Amino acid sequence: MSAALEPKPPRAVAAVAAIAVNTFREAIRDRILYLLLAFSLLLIAASRLLSFITVGDEEKIVKDLGLSAIAVFGVLTSVFVGVSLVFKEIEKKTLYTLLASPIRRWHFVAGKYLGFMTVLAINVSLMTAALFLVLLARGEAPWMLVPAVVLTLVQLALVTAFAVLFSSFTNPVLSALGTLSVYVVGHLSWSFDLLKKRLPLGAGRRLCDVAHSLLPSLDRLDVKMHAVHGLPLPDGYVLFGICYGVCYSVVVLVLACCVFERRGFA
Amino acid sequence: MRGLVVTLLVLAGAAGAGSGRAGLLRLAGERAPAQELLYLPNGKYLKAVSLGHPGLVADLVYLWAIQYYSDYERGDRYRYVEHVFGNVIGELDPHYVDPYWLGAMILVAESRDLEAGLRLLDLGFERNPDRWILPYLAAFECHRVRDYSRAARYMDRAAGVTDAPPLVLRMRAAMVARAGDVREALDMWREVLADPRSDAGARAIAERQIRDLKVKIDIAQLQDAAERFTATRGRRPARLQDLVGAGVVGSIPLDPDGQSYRYDRENGKVTSPAGRILGASPR
Image 1 (tube, helix red, strand yellow):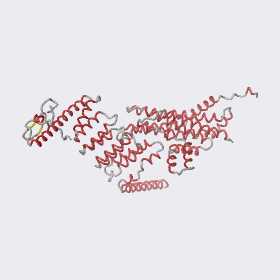
Image 2: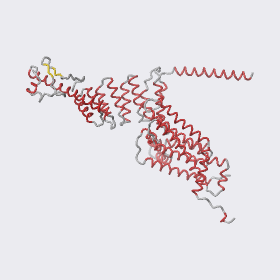
Image 3: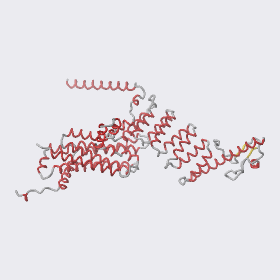
Image 4: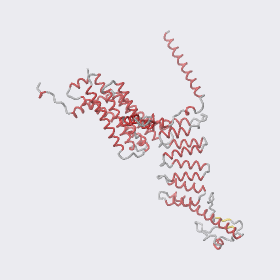
């Protein structure tokens, strides 16, 4: 076949978009998403009931429970669905068909990630809408919660990037464990500072600094308490948070693409 | 036969589990009072393991504490109130104001431990200096035990908060008057009168208080002057005007209605024609 008759490789954006759309379609058909969504909506509704047994500010509990439900179910979705994104394609052997077509492996990883992030963003938006409706029905302005929700989505973007990275070279169980570990360590990254203060000067302290700088600081992206109490955030905090999360996720995804490029499929 | 064996086994298992559970509940009930609270970790540690959800954990501990302290049959239930509301919930979510005042109410109203209740309210205000309600409640508790000076100090703190409502200014003036500093109280009531946020009712109260305090201050001044006159001249003044003639006072004030104060030569007492007398004596 002459070169002129060979199929022209699709443009990167078109290839990534096509895979993202398919991932999105596939993910919204996945029952676990609906289950988690229904459960979180129920939980937000339950928060209204829970507030009856408190004394004082009922809205505070509704906000706390709603924001935590959004974060926890978002992370669970991200971990348990995210880790199977790549693995499922390998297991069902659909990956071979895809890789035989003129698309690059990084198109596949980026498309999978973007498609799944779209699902997560829709999930978070629906849960947020439900929480806002509950608060509005109680005569409470919910808008101050927006920064917390935005930074929760940034955290989910980071966690999902790690889920994709782990799933690019290992099985779903280990990927889920690895991603959950990143989530836990990310929320305990402040402890490296604590540890550093207890160590003598030297390599140990430098190691703490390196670990603290390299590991994702998810605790810095958590502003739920500020949002619930209406405490002001420093100017530009949310923008810096978005910048940090997006850039960190890009680095992790690039790593995932590199690992996936080198992976052999028998 | 097989069905019978299965049924008997299920029934025996259920009976065993039921009696075991009853035993566990009985033994749990015999534990030392408030033992479950002894090992409740400080909020700092709970915060570390809450993985970004300290607010929710604070809510759950708070809800549990409400149920726990609603059980009036529990012995020794007040021993850890300060720990639960101040160190656990307060450390988890320092800006959650309700636990401070609820814990303080339990301590003051039920445990009769005013100092512990005030400590909890102080802790809450230290962490939330923009919440006037905490020193306001502390002032009320002090007022309840007639410690007016302390109540006035707390009310002063509450009034110092930027968004404290006009009510706090009124209460501060009232507490200061109760504490006996009528001159300071008079200034505070004038402040209430001048406050543009005061409504017609608040202004009417302030005007009445200002009139009463003015009478009280005038009477105290005239009484003091009459006593000094008696001490230096060896006799009581015949009328209030004698005090001016003797140079003890510059002039004799009129009451807010423009009437003269009364003086009883027989017992040397100065009174108001309207009989406006407050409980506290001026400093």
